[in-house]
Length: 201
Image (cartoon, rainbow, N blue to C red):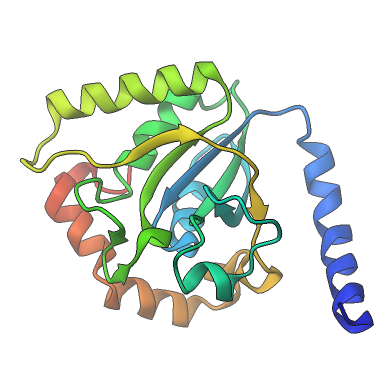
């Protein structure tokens, strides 16, 4: 690793340390729903969500990069780690937000993004989360407003790796490009088709 890269990484870690320290005692949840820019944007709107971090979950190799993950075959999925205040929003409510923000009927893709790195998955951090996620999925199977089966995985999280700094808060840093991408990818149109007025809520 070059000194230049090392210094850049050290600066990024220093910037991230303060907000993480403030929320160290708060619970976290990890969701994969296609493009992590979009998932991060959706959860940032939820009252009680303290912070969101775009990253990678579901693989085993250390220090995955965007180039590696986006090429496929690593086992990782673009994911978002959500830190939340349980006095304001519960894990069950986060699950509801998640379901209405993804298309859970397609395998290894979301909207215009294709590959296992864009799969939908709920990465659970403990037995309680797993139980609630499975119950939520079972309820959705009973009550869903569409005919397709639910293919979203519910799996143990393993280690979550934050993505590169330029991916964090991408929708805030690059609003025009983000809006163009999200609209062009057909995300909101498909969500409305699936969920109707509940889409994105």
